[in-house]
Image 1 (tube, rainbow, N blue to C red):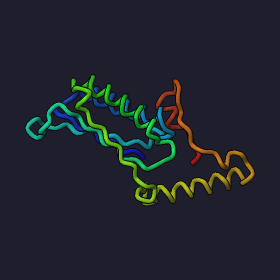
Image 2 (cartoon, one colour):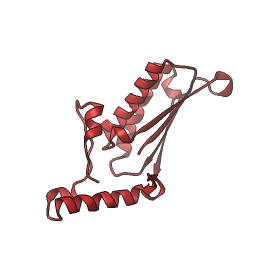
Image 3 (cartoon, rainbow, N blue to C red):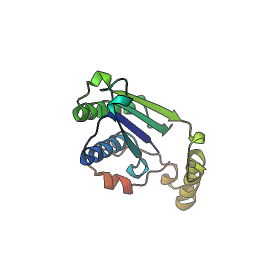
Image 4 (tube, rainbow, N blue to C red):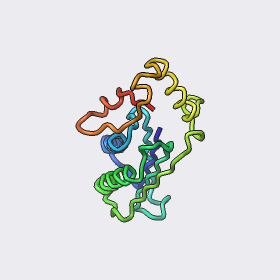
Length: 160
């Protein structure tokens, strides 16, 4: 359940902003087991008079701490987003700030149910459906990589 907030000075065309939001979601999907439908991306465009450091985009990524959200995955995501933002905004890559915040599963909820409780519920449901002896009951999430579209990744069901 990543929540991504992108902030920069100036206005971009709607198509450019949509492309950026899709790109960020694709990078998260490509480097983690996160489904595209669970990624929230928000863009905030600031007027120049309201920003001290004019050409320094900021990206804040809040997400629940999951095993596949490793430092290596974060580095790949940061590099890709930095390159894309530099191309879109003209900002110097050295000025682009990206910060990840790992939130414990017990500190985040979706639909009023903590992500921790949701994962336990999902695991129990899968074990009941697959049976305790079924190899699938202990399956773990894994990243979907390669040439799959974002729509294909949205429909994929990963095991907790």
